[in-house]
Length: 189
Image (spheres, rainbow, N blue to C red):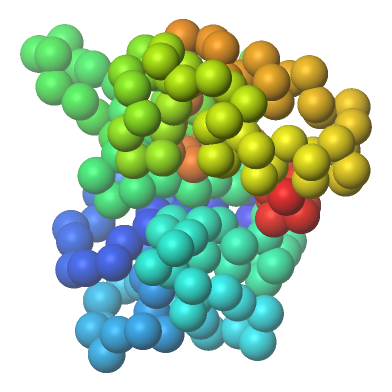
């Protein structure tokens, strides 16, 4: 069993950063002839949603890892421009190694990006200021599904629309068990 693997979502040729724990995954591979060196493709297995990349973005890679990657203790997803990093003594960002990620995960359940303030409706993210929450389309569409499938999550879901900050981008590193649980809930909804 492999200890840790962080999949880096790419849709174009990009430099590889980090050590051997990082593996590029070509998202939306089914819709392009582009060959991205050193990457696996999100359409390489029977169970994939690669063709839906135009509406699911990096989630086609998340789905691939959930459904097709096994025998790994810790797993993650990030973007080719947004990798887990820390600042060195010179103030430059340095990508964390697999060993450093495992050290953090020995004290925490999950590694997420730093929370940022929501600032209006941008790229599908939201901050309720001028719109009634009951009229906001994503809220109206998802709330009945959540009430039906995950009623224990309803109050947390409502609260999310009123919190001032969040961790953006489907970026995380955690145990494969937690990852699978998150993906099941996300793709059910």
